[in-house]
Image (cartoon, rainbow, N blue to C red; front, side):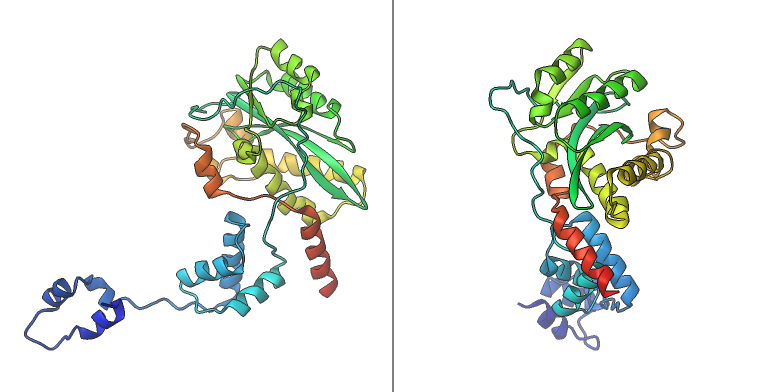
Amino acid sequence: MDYKIKIGIVEKETDISINRQCELLDLNRSSLYYKKRIKDDAREIKEDILSIYENTPFYGHRKVLVGLRNKGYEIGKKKVISLRRELGLETIYPKKITTIIRKEDKKYPYLLLGMEINKPNKVWSIDITYIKVGNGVCYLAGIIDWYSRKVISYRISNTMEVDFCLEALDEAISKYGKPEVFNSDQGSQFTSDRFISKLKANNIKISMDGKGRWADNIIIERFFRTLKYENIFLKRYENILELKKGVKDFIDFYNKERFHSSLNYETPDSVYFGTNKTKIPEICKFDRDSLVNSLLWVFVYNKQISQNTCIKEAS
């Protein structure tokens, strides 16, 4: 029997108690008194749309609509589409490929599955992302500490040669020692003899993502997303000098001042150097499949830039 019909059958003025009627109809009594919360404040709707987008940027307008209705909004599809367009949001699809695999290079197994990551320098990881600058493209290689989320080192280059990745690795080791495990994807920069030799010379265990499994390196991917949405998209740097200064300033802010919910609202620096005031949950028995489900995002930079340009011109 339909849920609404069951509610309609229940009578308050009868010899049979409300509790007994609910039992007979297999109905939760509290549902008789529930009134759907109706929300229509435009600012609240936009904030919730942004919240949904931040957590699930791969959702199209239909799933966003369901999410909003579940939150109590009486809203239609056209309104959701209009608000998403007004906010400059666009569903994210697969990103430009920055991982070029050389078949002849040796690949290493993925070591993080099931690992307890409970202290700084347990696991570092590296990845490369691309950034549109003026009419060209630059590449950013970043190294991050998994436990504290601290960006250990980075380099920016206009090519994807191994040199700028090695420079970032050299700086990281000289400043912060070495990790127990170093994780990367199977890109040719990280499988090259020069890069592998550097890790082996420092007795660092080598871990590599599975082929096509970007979520195996989720911590650095999350940082790249944060960098782009909180800085790159807003600044739209015109040359590499502007970009280098802007990225340096943002990473300083990210490490020293930006609070992280996953760190109990501590900063990466406070956690890395042990000055945090609250206990930080360890990344325990890492499960990549759960991370795939929780953050299935990848990125098309040119589409977002195009969308932001349209919004700016329209305003």
